[in-house]
Length: 315
Image (cartoon, rainbow, N blue to C red; front, side, top):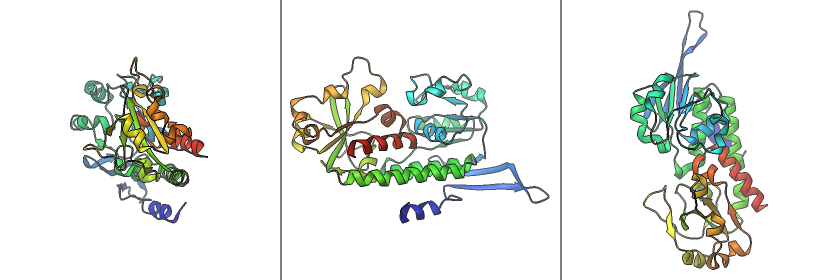
């Protein structure tokens, strides 16, 4: 681990992100059952009980992290198609379907009587209603600091679920792998992260939803991509892409990720005369990412898988 990484992790054995406290009995021993954790979430500081038994999760990114930490989950939004990444939850009869990310089934959630509800991302707007049912933490992540933001969540869950050692290890692995692969990316030439959908392309730049590739991995942006909304890219014509001539293209196929029927896959969308004359196409440097993991999941495990794919492509 680099000196910066070591310094970063040394801040969090008892993290500034969570403030844990516990009661003591007459003999001075900790009463673990009374321990609570004050979580710094997007909806403020929320006091939650340690080791909550019944946990409902309304965010794929958070579910990815909790899955990595082997936390038991009581309910997930499964009214819509569940990403294949989470098939093991969809196939588990003990995991309740609690609606969708955008439209939680509040009645079912209440019937579960959860000790903790975790929202974030697409479900953030439902946080106030979920708070009326049980302690709820909005754990949305910051796309302007993907690595740091995800690892903050990892370490917070380590405190909440008494998995500090596992959380430290996961966060360290993510940072180390990002540094390793970043050395390859930063020396590979310039590039663009693009999304294909409905036959069109949009490009993303630093600080955007996919800023991780630039801000954390060191990809040099081919174009100065701007957008009024960090979650949405800048629509790009094929002519503009050809003129920019990126060395690398990192491609996310939105239509495939969401299972859009009848949509052309990214490979077909990009197979045209303009794209084919770019350095990325001529040098076989168009990397088609696992779009479901990148677009729909986006947690630490998903990012580690993407790092493996990038390393394979650049090695």
